[in-house]
Length: 407
Image (cartoon, rainbow, N blue to C red; front, top):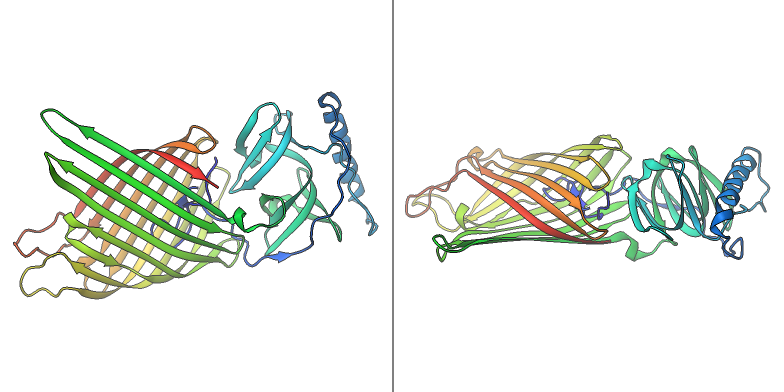
């Protein structure tokens, strides 16, 4: 499924651990550029569709055979066409241009079927005489023209031909490495309203900006909800998050800086800030399911809107957090993500808090989708307000929204 690199990721603060759009960044560590792209193109003209398949098949078979033996330094791949071709596991061939492959999904601009997005696991072979960047495990990326078979990625660079196992390929980026390839953003808006015997309405806005390269992932997000009933406000919540992640290996990641800021009038929170540092692990990452867990140590600052006499305001505490993230890809267009974060405030256990999110999304087009989200907020023992009332421990929220993803 098309997802922005925002989309919910691994991290140790809510909203950065997964999610986004756009799911996780690929964990390949620091990047070593093996070679620049070659400068020439071959063949010189695109072939007719009726002969294209046979020529591309021959080209792939030939390069597989050639790479079985030791290659001379001047060896080049003889491509069958100037266009990208891919063969699906069903046996069908598509002609066009590959835009990207990441997080197990591929976007392909077909000459006949327009823009398509489907699972990388459905691609049996790829023939790409255009220069792209191929990102692998082991802190490596390679720019060049390539042939991808069932088992190999064979890339022609200006320094010669290099070969890698296909199962180590993490991403394909269109063209040579460019800064704009690392950025993505997502905006989702949900509205509801009633009029007549009851006048009420609610609006939710969610925005996320992500920069994710093969070594790091940085994210900034905002989630705001406003609501009224019979001309009186009954919801006013703002949640902001920011953080950065370094990928140590395919399974391990480290977050040196992450912070969550929460303002909620009806939870009596003027500001709850939870900066921290942590780490996590990819428990498993399959074609259909991804599951990550992580933890962090941090400092919690809370300033209440009002407090009963004798209660300290603001309050400063330490916390230990535990977080998990799961991503289920039912089809190329249907996805479910689940996140849970618990901050155990060990210096004042009653201020321990939790945030849980379940997000079900259906892709409509390449950039638009429908999302249904359920959110749960809990504080174990909220302190009383100045008037003696005590906020409820639990808050629940259901949102249906239209989402726009770019990148």
